[in-house]
Length: 409
Image 1 (cartoon, rainbow, N blue to C red):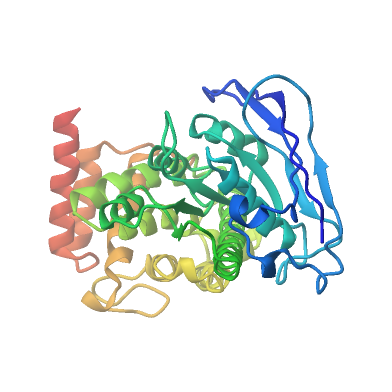
Image 2: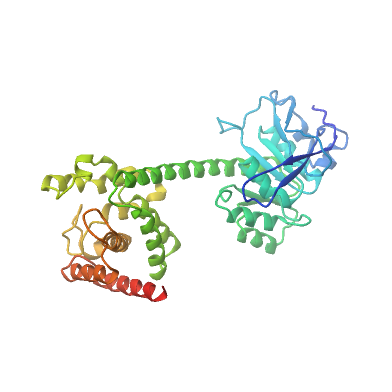
């Protein structure tokens, strides 16, 4: 058994993180004892939990990050020496435990430490946002009932922030009432655990959510790589200016005008960045050619929609964007490319995107042309619609949308 003696000391750690209103984090370091005569009653650990003979790797606790001071926040790293969390081959996951009751906090720390997690402690909600910014935990165990800022408020702040919204939050609470759980779901909680902890349940829930968080991060990183490639392609062609950024803004407001869903608007925004990503595979001799393209050049240029589709296809999150990438050059009468789709066979979002893409191209200055006034651009698009190139109903909605925007301005 491990002898774990309690000896609390305070320390202060300063945080400077841009515009973050939290300017300082006050910490207390502590050592605990697993195996004292009253360990089961004070920590909620059973004798089975305390028996470590079948865990030879768990022989001592590693304690770091101690700067001694005089305040009352606990924030320290606790990890079982030599242990390894199953399923995680890289750095051990980092868990932040937030609870104003020391006994409950110690229980969670002990159980997670046995599993090989790197554990950080905090004893109140008011400093959590700053601590998360500094420590970047993989998961947060968050008590609901705390003085000052409670767990609901903390969770809501974290889930509203783009930088912290992917961090899973598990509420730890003695509350079993339906109202508290509904409130937790509303503010974005990912799971719930009831005190006293069950060791197996705690381990399973934490491991599952940490794995999901890391998968989401991998997906997020892959998406960012694609966006970076798309932006670099835009800069490769000096003729387009800030075409993508303009399409993002126009796509969002037109999508809202059409009352599209949040996910459809997101796909339009992503399509604004990624619709021409396939041009990475088009030779400069064609992409940057001055003057008219030959029929052979056009055949090469038209391949960019297929190349773009192949680039984005492996990512499941791009399913709604791929139809925009592949079909934003189709025409209502079937004379477009690459599949010569007609009418409503053309994916709706590709039709929507095509209108904002053409409108921006007409109203923006290019080396080979001046920017057309809005009214003239709409007139040209209407003539193409009358000749069978565009969806007449959608074109009418787009013209009304542009006129309404101009009236507001």
